[in-house]
Length: 535
Image (cartoon, rainbow, N blue to C red; front, side):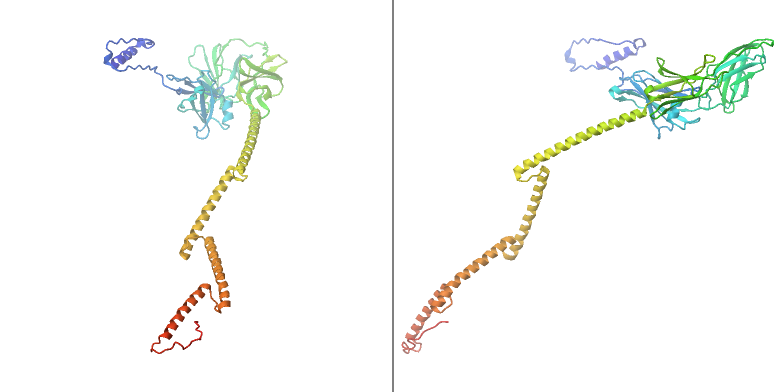
């Protein structure tokens, strides 16, 4: 049944007309419940859990401004959508340098552009021929989900100069040709080594070229002119004229009239070219410094300048009446952010403004303010840590005092739990050592004296035995003295009793022998009155 049911769904979805349709309800009618035990349903929305990596990563370039960018395609088929993208970039394929920026959160941007100024501020020795490396990752910060990085794509900085700007043409007032005027902002990575003029009239299908125009020129007179309508390009060239870059605003079309020279004087209107080569840098604890060169085109001189900086078209600030070719914006007047800068010149004598300069960009960040904040934050945290440590030390000392008071009442020692534990351990070890030494004394004394006793016990026993012996001898001395005085014998009572017993026995034996001599004679009277002494 499962195979049949599953197949019915897959067959339905396999039909092209059904790919945008969804089954929202189905009914199963069962007639015989005994045919199965359990029923399971599974829904698969076809999405992979997590967040996918971007696809189709590629590089873009603006040869006029020197900007380099990357574009990509948002991932599909995953349960989570990127909130933003991280763009990593390096100048050595992420061996030692690995920088990253991010797109604006929830903007949906799938492209990011690095200005030339930003790249040079990151890689100070970056130049023509060097290679940049890029990779991108999807980020879902809310759910802490991050995709893998894409494969790395590369961009090698080409030896191409920026195209000229403000290209104009005037028919020579002597009717000897056409004079071309242009401005070279030099905002690309390379500097032109020459210029090339390309032209064709209304009847031509291919351009004719005039090469070898000086790299320092800002105008050129073309004299091979006939009456017609012409399309003109001025190319900025490098590599000995082999790599040429057209004007930033495309070609110009000029109609050449067949006019006979007259003595009529043509008044050339006043013109003022834009400021040149703007550069934006940051100075620590000062602000953002903008430098530029005076205009190198037009027939008037700039008397003052206007500086514009903005984060968007709706948020632009202007500084006017600048009389130098540099201006420093204090950090107090330019909050952190990504800014675009432009300058234009003003000639008050003729009340004319120039066109705007090229527009460098800069990510402004007041490092001094950040350092001050970090220092204050570090000081605050250090003070909090000091207070916490002081409180912890007070609590520790209070706890130690509580332990001392408790142990004093329990053991008689004013000591902490650790000190008590160390003392008790030390006393235990000393007692074990004492008992061991005593045991060794008992074993040695047992071998020597037959008594299982310590040295002290042995000394006490021997002292006691000595004292007892002395007392015994003293007790014996008293009857000896007494008996010597009474009997003439220096003897104890026991010795006196034993002596007297023996004397009695000997006397009896003697008397017996006197009565019955061995030879049968009568000797009863012999020796009568004689004292018998026993020595």
